[in-house]
Length: 301
Image 1: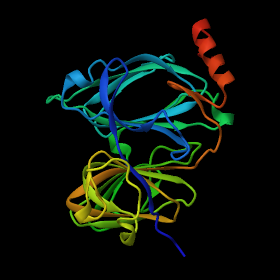
Image 2 (image 1 turned 30 degrees about the vertical axis):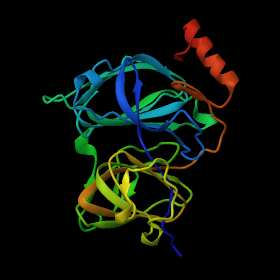
Image 3 (image 1 turned 90 degrees about the vertical axis):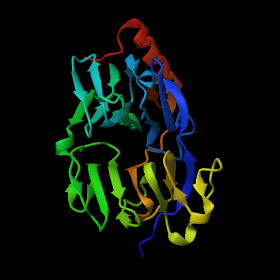
Image 4 (image 1 turned 120 degrees about the horizontal axis):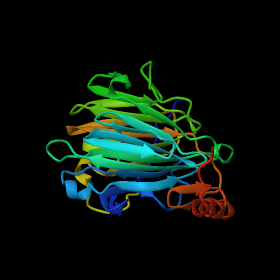
């Protein structure tokens, strides 16, 4: 019998500063990776104040991971050590596989009102693929299918398949799903999900209840005061939900509707040795990476 995914953990993203002084909120990252495997980090860089983001992320290295940048409002200009450069704007996605090593920069710019909204997700690579050649999948908004899989539900499908629509990001080792889902007020939706895959939701507009309705109060919440207990498990802006295993996930929108990212991937289950933007399996591999950075041999031809 198919089972609904129960909520395993709820947290809120926390303010932090990254890059050259970018103020953002971190949903998870730089800690125990077991719960989120194969994902490493999720940053929410929405701001209406250019001073929060204008300094950007100047030249820095990556190895052993994939970085996924999704822009809602504003734009991000990027360049890298392979000579690639470009700008992604509203609705666009950049899925960068750092592999054996890349040095790049990302410089955000707001819209006319100064708004810069987007997210960056880091996904791990299995040991046998950590030193693969770097590559990009740069996806323009118009190539991302948008479907209505149920009444009052809209899904942008960046990776994975929903209602017969498959996202443009393909051939990724961890077999990811990356969806931007909107439910109108009062709408409910049950989405099939691959059993055994890690599943996360991150709410950034409105609120919703997630998981089986009878389990509305039956999950541990870290941090207090960010959901209304009189409305059960109505989780709003900045809420990160981690689900247990199952065959489908349920969401029920609140009075203002809801919009959230739904992210899934096949766990890797390998040791993680992590320092900044370099993620390997052993401390020795980390030392090698930074020795190569100092020696000028980090980038492989």
